Length: 200
Image (cartoon, rainbow, N blue to C red; front, side):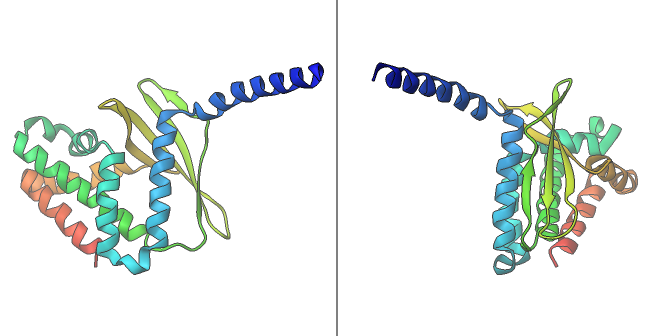
């Protein structure tokens, strides 16, 4: 009886030691996991929700997960420093709407996909790089790299890489023309047109 009791105590101690280690995942990875879980839920309801309904679900989700002020400042490039506070707020909001519309357009239905997050997170200076995968029912998975940075006491996405392609760098190249020709107002019009096109 004493031996049995000792074995139970030892096993309980091992379980207690194991559980915190499993739960102590990187907080940046936890943000990506939550974001992907919510994305999957929207995909499953996608056809029923329609484009506008998916957008309405994605907008608050992306606002929680992404650091749009940091992203918009980079995407605008040197022009950002010369903008008024009002113009900056306008463009941050427009960029958030564009991101939500892009997700609503690209993740419009569920066809048996699942999302995975690699628990191994790469640290690069102040940023954490989280690897996610979209695994289709058939075919090869798509790898996504989420660049995360602390903001307001939590971790937020500041860029997403599809393969080696930075989506934020792509946006910066796309925004350069409207900014050069029309300033903040011209870029805002461009973003609004993109949103309307995505939600058709």
